[in-house]
Amino acid sequence: MSDNGELALLLLGPAGATGLYWALYRYYRNTDKSHAFEHETEVEAQPVTGSDRKIDDVHGTRRSEINGNNVGEYRTRVGTAWRGGSS
Image (cartoon, rainbow, N blue to C red; front, side, top):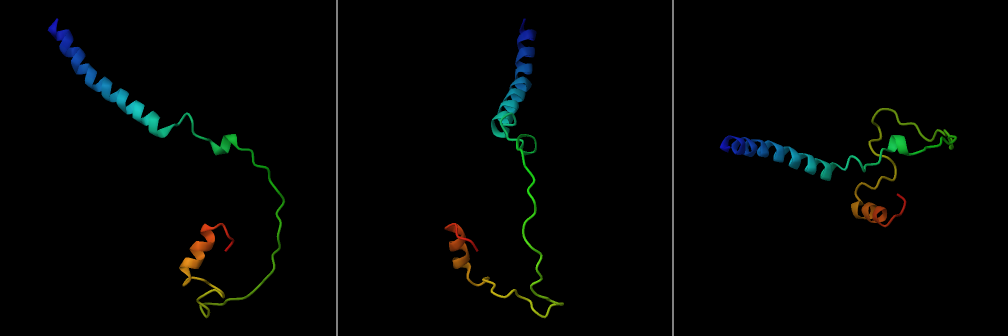
């Protein structure tokens, strides 16, 4: 009789670990509740709009920066983007 009890106790460890792993996996992954964009979202193609107008030529590295760059104005760039402004 004690052999059956010991065997049950030995099997309880791996069974419990497997159950805990499965429960945590399901809790954190939510695979049954995730959104499958490719299958559940309908995307309709729209005609391309805009134009291909040539603006400027840059050859080699004569000009290393773009005109009007705002690299040094970090607070302005972040503040404008944070408030929902464009640029």
